[in-house]
Length: 325
Image 1 (cartoon, rainbow, N blue to C red):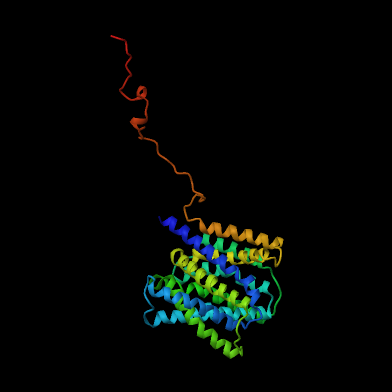
Image 2: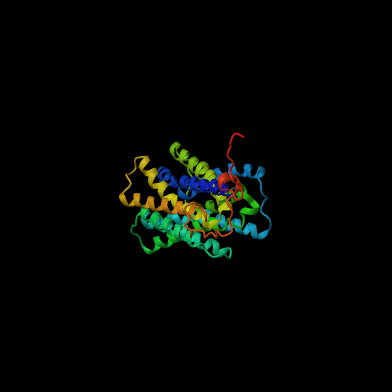
């Protein structure tokens, strides 16, 4: 039963990260729209769906200053801060550089997650995450950029890591639905304030922009957040982390599907590395591919089951011949 649950959680994490990867291609249709206002609208749409669900979902509302502080920190760093740093990073560095930096997230989470909980990181999971990070960086490519762009990319990486690590202590009590609902609701005023400070002005989105924002808000935010947080609560940060590498794979595949480009040999090789790393992480310890020393058996004193022994070889029993008399 536990293994089936883990497989289901792994499938959910893979699906959620694959959906997040489609955001790169969809976001190309909203490049002319004010970025921070668009993100505020995105999370506003998600909050309108998730908050009614949270009222009927399992779990409890946030309790005490500590949980509220963690929620605000999650919304500020993992949602609002991540998007702000990502926008600034792309402006001052190449998308390939930003993608390569963000590709390190699985490795950072697989190491930092257990350390935060006072555990030693698993060598198997760290190795899988390292393979995934290398594949994600290879699939994203390596580009140029100044020190400022690199700093913003590291800031986006920090936000992505905190999006998972800050959720771990909240998930047992709040649950995936409530955590998603409260975090996106708190991100809306933070992004609106950032848009006001940066001087962005609101305008009504075009039909194409509105459809893209609705997809990002409903599919990528609502569905992907729920799948990821449910998997995170069941698997833990270190076991769920390698699935984050599927974002780069999904982004490359989506770009090819919509005709925006053909994957290069490096992108294909990176996708294969990600697949290898995710597979290694998905196989539980002691699974069918685990190498073990053959068990040594002491056959002394063992008895062959009487029911499986031919009657002519049973001790003290000699088969009789029917002589007809």
